[in-house]
Image (tube, rainbow, N blue to C red; front, top):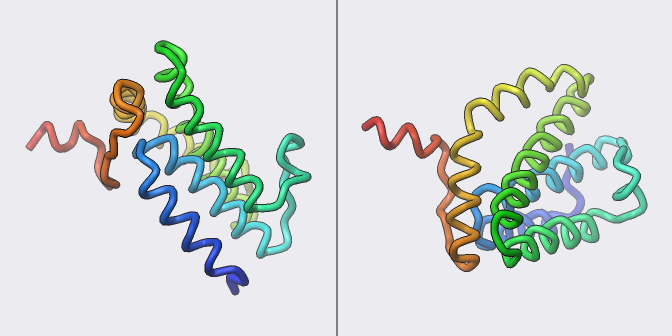
Length: 149
């Protein structure tokens, strides 16, 4: 796969790492990046709400919505970020499945990821809603793993 717009990809990666919430921002960023990868392979957007947008427009809508949700009162903020996280990562995994040849084959991975990350996504969403400027560095293991050590 040849990435035609490396500057855009670098900007999106940098923005999703620095925007704050380790879950919702990164989940939406993962969706946009995997959509971009799918576009590079000749696929088109299946979401009718996003199908008319370019990749930079999708990124602006998704990350803008995520930032707006951070300023809603609870319980809307926590549940909104929690949902945006799950939907973002699920869409990213689906996109990778489509690129690999079968979106539905990704469903077990989505279910497993939800089971594995559910509590950590909720906790991260709650912390972000308490302080929208809160930054969580990227982690590769769930917080509950760190509690066991």
